[in-house]
Length: 101
Image (cartoon, rainbow, N blue to C red):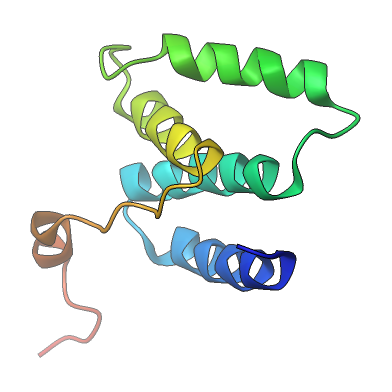
């Protein structure tokens, strides 16, 4: 992924954050930070990023806070250059409709 593709992906992710359920939004926030580091590489803030990465590695799916777990999973996926997870079908169908019928 080059920088132009990354910029388009980040714009899409930023838009999705605002329309997503809270846990999905946290996943996307983590993914956003991870993919930026993945694409741009080591920055001047590498020590802070390394500490952040260590914290995310320590947070498995058992932190007790679903938001932290979602953010950590997103960060790891982005950091490793993976595609973002698709939202689950249950979360899509469990949302109330945007237009009243």
